[in-house]
Amino acid sequence: MAKLVDNGQEQTSELKEAVAALLPHVNAQKYQFIPLHIANLLWAMAKLVDKGHQQTPELKEAVTALLHRVNAQKTQFNAQHITNLLWAMAKLMANGQEWTPELIEAVSALLPHVNAQKANFKPQEIANLLWAMAKLVDNGQGQTPELKEAVAALLPRVNAQKAQFSAQHITNLLWAMAKLMANVQKQTPAFKKAVTALLHRVNAQKTQFNAQHITNLLWAMAKLMANWQEWIPELKEAVSVLLSYINAQKANFIPQEIANLLWAMAKLVDNGLEQTPELKEAVAALLPHVNAQKNQFIPQGIANLLWAMAKLVDNGQAQTPELKEAVAALLPHVNAHNDQFNAQDIAIQLWAMAKLVINGQEQTAELNEAMIALLSKVNAKKDQFIPQHISHLLWAMAKLGELVELNVVKSTTELLAYQISKYPQLSQQEISMSLWGALVCCARLSPDSHANKNSLLEKHMDDLFTRLENASLNNEEDQSIIAMAASWLGRACPIPPHYQTNLSKPQTDFRDQLQSSIPTLKIEAERSLNSLPPVDLLLPDHNIIIEVQGPSHYVCGDFNTRNGSTLLKIALLQKAGFEVIEVPVNTLLNPDSIKRCIDQIKTRVNIPPQGHGSVSLKSGSADEKYGTAYI
Image (cartoon, rainbow, N blue to C red; front, side, top):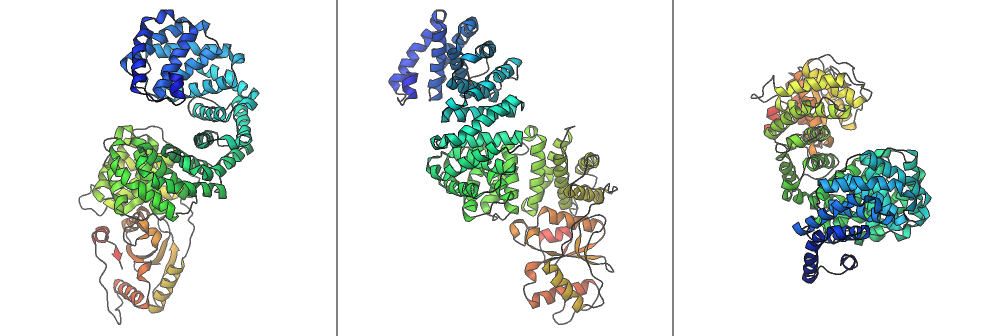
């Protein structure tokens, strides 16, 4: 019955009734089954479950009865039996079987026999065994000596029989090795040799891979690269070969495969794969299917897709209309599924939204709703976030600047800063991102009369500062962050950063016109004050700073919603005692508006304006809140 179902027989009511009738007899006759029967029965039950049969109490009882017999007859199983049994246990685990004492004992009993029988396994059995062990590990199997020994025994057999593996075998083996490497496997010479041998076979059998194979292979290669980080020629060639087949197979990918493929491509790019024509074509081929199948993605698929698109864009992928449309199609589903996202899903989606917005994604009602829906779940999941999640959340909220409501920023940042302070060990990137995020939050809260100046948040910032201070600060970004934190906290700057200066054309034009209008005015450009990032224009005799703000200073470039970097720079300068005047470049589009800006500055420096007279500052809650002169 399992074999018939595996070959297309529907699970009709008659078939289900027949299975249900037989299951009680498995338990009743358990002592009469020979090793072949035990192997066939467990294989059959695993196959039926994998094809949709429910794990009823009767089926679970039958499985338990057979698992008892595995240990009792362990010395009588041949190579094929061992393969089918471990495959069956892995399949049952993948479909909801719990780690019962009987299952743990059965797996432990079989693994030592893999090494003993290693010379007897055929290519299909080698592939199925490594797949089964990887699947068991993926579902919680411990890193026991027996498991490691079994994997080590099979790896040389992969290389020896490489020419006999089918397309399915190659796919399963590379998937298994990627999973094992992510969880238990070290980069031994035998492991590298087996992977390299299989990568050679990808090119040789390239015409035989179907849509599922292509997906699993690229996923496996992305996972291997995430842990291996070595672009060997065989890997480059295999990736290139598979990418060229995505366009041809694009109509055959199911939603999960689309999500996994885009995740894999983004992961490969993040680990050094160039954005080749094949990769760009593959991405372009899949994006319309994201929109077409938007209602069929599970929550994890939605999270992975948003992460993948943000990561691709962050690494140079153009924000094409198709990519923006795919993102827009997914955003309503973030809100719809917000109760089903785990901690990692929440963190990577907020990170993705921040990255996409930075790179030109439009600010829409759907984007705002999705962001609010995710942030509302942070408190409930607070104990499930690992340091990487927390640092990404703090960074994302900071980057989104005024797009996130102030009360949400305050409550969420304080919560996350407290959570990350509980971890004694943090990576330098986690410390740096978290410190910057907390700084931006303090910048937003500083003009608030209700903000506690000796807040717990600043205490956590001080702790993060000390941790970063004691690290090796070799990159400019970390040096800049610690300099800004030192300025905010009133501490000595350990390493004054070296900033690159860049006097833009709008800055130059405005400076020249201001100087022409007020010849006696002393103006300095691109000057760093108190180890802070260079200011656009400084009027040293008046303690006034003029910031000419281009689109990059605003969320989505809207000239209305300032981003975290802009808010932090302004707040730090104000904290240092400077008056800051912001001049958005869109106000410098014609001579009249330039004249009004210059007249306003004349008023600030006590020079009577001529012609139009002084102009009132632009009002608005955000501007008044920061006390910034905004022309």
